[in-house]
Image: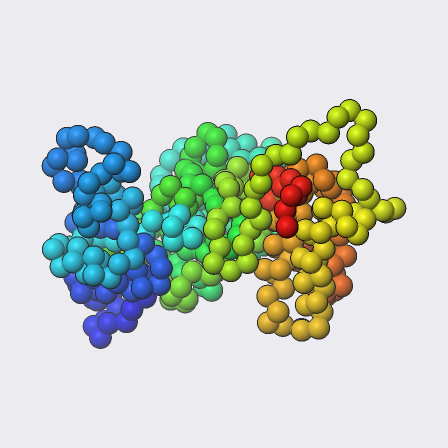
Length: 377
């Protein structure tokens, strides 16, 4: 976040701080849009669009630089951002999470009756013998999830941007994995897709309130620590995938995710399947091997460089591709896991547990995009 000469708390209440923060975010590729003064909701549409109720894709105002339709109008154009906050200095700041490549955990602390224990961590049974005395909000359920997985409490993660909300909640800002799945937004009190009770997910299809935004309840304030979002921890990416938040892979500015190709005609009954050597390895020259082999070689080559070789990104890409090949029926999941584990442990033998977390998460993500390699070059 940009620095201001005034005291930190006093600076949060100035129009200059909000304008500078909006411009700072836009300059770093985070599309911003105005929030109505004193609220955390998007600035209202113009009178014509409010009455017409047309979809954002057909709105004539957005191409003209207006803020109709909330986060659909979000932009990184500094001239447009500066003009908006010049017109209304009291605007708050919203960030469109999907285009920004953000996944934000919104931890609530709302007074509410405790739901059935099986809804506290969807998909994770909580034995009746577990004492839930004192559990009352999202801070507790997220800490419980982290403890269940043997991980540190994300609410204490000062390596990423953390924003305190006026109601006593917390926003944890993370960068979504490059080339991995896009994650959908959800409500922690939802009966379908949810990560944990009173822990909302702000991602594709949603927006997050940025620091310096002032509402009737107070101001959103960045906590001490990092001022930029850190990469989404692998175990949290795996949890979001497990709980149904994963969507199609995001476009990446770095190594790109494999592109889906048209499904090939099914072979006639009795026709031979993919050619494999003993032990499950695709024979050299097979389509699956042609696609996967160079990615595995790139992972193994990281053994030559102890650090700075982008090992995690290379392993993530190889596992994502392997997941697509498995979903397309060209390899089994066990074969993929074996090939990936062998390559990863050859490069980074001292971190086999972390290697497996990367592999498992990316395999699951890649399985959402079946790959049919016939005809690929």
